[in-house]
Every structure is written in C-alpha cells, then in structure tokens.
Image 1: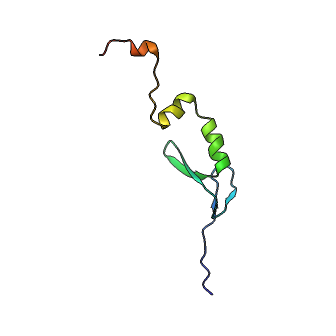
Image 2 (image 1 turned 90 degrees about the horizontal axis):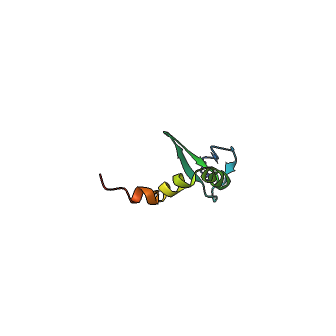
Image 3 (image 1 turned 120 degrees about the horizontal axis):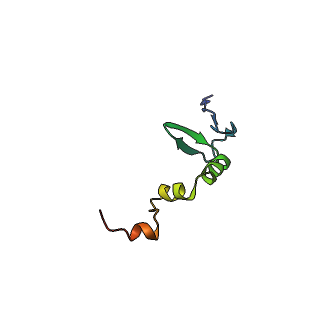
Length: 72
C-alpha cells in the first residue's frame, strides 16, 4: 500500500488545522510571514487602516491640498 504522508498545516494565528482542500493565505508582517486560515486572514485584513488597504492594491492616497501644491 502506497500511503503518502501529508504535512499538516495549522493557522499561524489561531492554530486551527487547515484541511488539504481548504484555502490558506500567506500573511507578512515585518520580516515574518505565516500561513493563516480564511477567518484569520479576514480579521487581519480588517485590522488594516484604509490607507494601508489602499496601498496594498496600488491606490495612491492623497488630499486635494496635496494635489494643488506646486511640483518640487
């Protein structure tokens, strides 16, 4: 019988077992990176400020005042 051993993955935040068919997400904070379950990913993402979320998708964060300043 050929039984392959699969590595068990656990969420880096809550420790929940992530089943082979479940999605997991990498989360990087500073120099540390870990895999997290979908619930923890949502919670971590919700903790980000609006400007942090905007920068993640490449959106420029500015104000009308900043736009009207002469170029330096």
